[in-house]
Image (cartoon, rainbow, N blue to C red; front, top):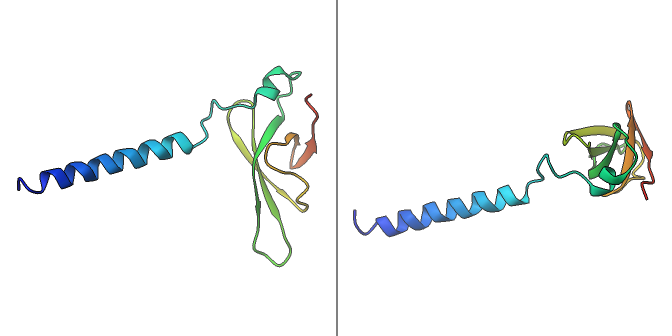
Length: 101
C-alpha cells in the first residue's frame, strides 16, 4: 500500500489541475461586455459569444448572445452575417446589429 500512495496523490493533483483549468476557461455569468456597460441602457442588447452552423443540407446558424444580466440566448439565423464579439439587439427571434461606440 505504501508504494501506491504517491501515485494516488499525483492522480488527485492531476484531477485538481484539470478542474481548475476548466473553471478558468468557462465564461462566467458576471462576464458582461464592457462596451454594453457604458452604452445607453438597452435591456435587449448583448454580445455574440458563439456562431455555429448546422449540418443540414440547408445551412442554419445558431447564434449565442450573452445578455447584460449574464444569461445566454440562442437564436436561429439563415445567414452567417454575424461574428463573435458583435454587439446586437435581440428583437424576439431576430437580431439587429448595434453600434455602441
